[in-house]
Image 1: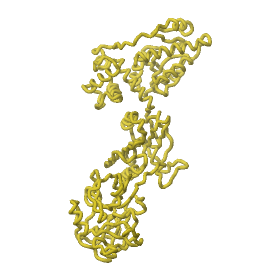
Image 2: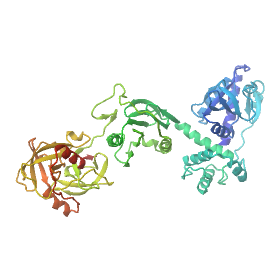
Image 3: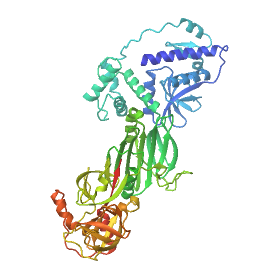
Image 4: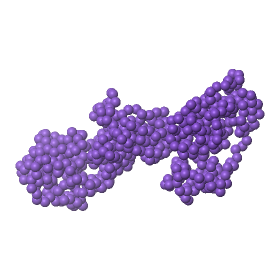
Length: 597
């Protein structure tokens, strides 16, 4: 790689200077430099300028009047500088944002030590060809004519292992970390970034040397270290990795700006859409709120098309993680509660970008910082589609079927109707937690679900062992309106009959109106004991009147559930509650159950 770079740079310089002679003798002009990097501190700039100096001639380090430290090639006449810039950009050897600088901002030179290119115009009329300084006005034609054919590349080490160890000992902790990061990037190192060159790091260095056809000593020479860092920087440049401070969102993060560009603020997202047909999108998450806001976002995100159903779901106390993958889409979302705000990001990509995202995602994760400020809830772009199938301009994925259920125990076991266990690829509790069918009784129309991960419900059912009193007041909890509400609602009525419309002993008739999506919900008496489960609103294919609801009797269900090995809690005598407390009790145990295909 090093010899190839030098050979390309040599051909570039000869071509550039020869082009100047086509129009006659070059005229004296102002000098320019090709500025390739700038850093806020001298230590980083010195490390980078020395790395470039191992690979190419005419490398300079300047302190600018802005306070930054610049790495620049030159000086050149303007035409030469432009050709140098174009060719090196075309070869991908310098960052894409490199540019020509006239030098007015350069105050002092710190590399090479003792150099004075800022004070001399002679270098602008010269080029380096095969290590010799050639005057562009008189000697170029001779140099071109006498240029020998390139000799075969021979990998000659620039240092002995002992010398390499000595130069390695001069590295700072930051420089040693950077080498480990670069080795990790290329898949040679999988340990922690600790700056310690132990057996794992040595083995990765040897693997790198073997892969690049170098002598496998396990100790990188100065030139090899420079080559590794240059290759790593080239990879970052190809992705356009830049540290972005989005002040509107209050988020600072490394983003692949060769793949995405800022598009708009659409609360609670700062949206960066794909460019260059990358198939990649990023959304920064930013909204004021508390844990309830965080958990609400966790549920909402899982309803969006950008989060495929297959993937990891993990909700912790103050953060959550969502991943999704399908045949044509991938996504990764993480968010956390930080100082009264929910901050995070979503990365979305097509499978063709899997290899690139495997490198981009860790950089985004390690660089993410929440800074002051959150998005304004009024941040909505003009012309936004605000239909019921959209959230913040993003398409909502709708379940095939929604019904209600209720917790039977403190681990999250749910009793519901068999309607949600039919042709469903996945069953979710509260649109967030995947569940498996543990038991079903088609004759009764009940199913028991167990979540894949244990839950900690606020409340669960206490089943009544005795039938309720006829004409007693009752409450039904459920999710009407197609399950559109985020919490269960409660309806109040009375117990009209202890038998079904056809005289069934295990069914009771309620004088209360319920919706189809409330089937599977609990029926409670005034003490908060569960006396039944709401059934679907049809009997033998006939739709019941709006004010009539049928429910399985809890006293008849207990034996069936216990025979199936389903643990239940029996109700104990208790006093009557007011409607507010009864509604709260019912909501704590009631869940939305959804069927997804």
